[in-house]
Length: 231
Image 1 (cartoon, one colour):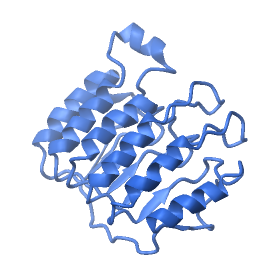
Image 2 (cartoon, one colour; image 1 turned 90 degrees about the vertical axis):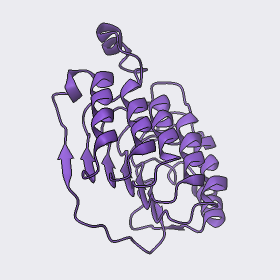
Image 3 (spheres, one colour; image 1 turned 30 degrees about the vertical axis):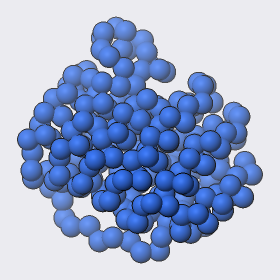
């Protein structure tokens, strides 16, 4: 990962965790219910939705066809909620099989958000490449997130570890694609609040991407933290 050395101190948070069985036994419906609740909520500061299969449907499309639910409906609902919610500070979306369209939908809400400080999207498939190197690389998620960071002034930490961000698995299977990583650099120049951006376990360095990372870091003011970087 790469990070500024300064770390923001976080207050104690009022938290809620929604775990398996999956959100409301329906990903899009659960997201809609969560959206309505968060839109009216002004006290909840930490929401844990990890492990709820909030996929946008490309890899697990069969589940969506069976349930007849719109792809990435839950994540789009969360994104819309983030436009208006100012209390939520930490959001954990790790291990949800989130793919490119899902993170892109969420990122459009982050662009206008003024409360969230930490976003954990670890261990997903945000460029639509699975852990087995299946799928077609799609950097839409990263370009939308980069665009959001150009305007967002509250996020201090983002975790995108274990997401095959360059199209490669942890075992370096797949085809290297740096378009997503390169999209970050011009947008991060405008962001002065982000302190930590975790890109570990993405096979970036192992695949020969160190020069690319160094170019990105030189443009953004971040430093490569070797002790935290595994990829």
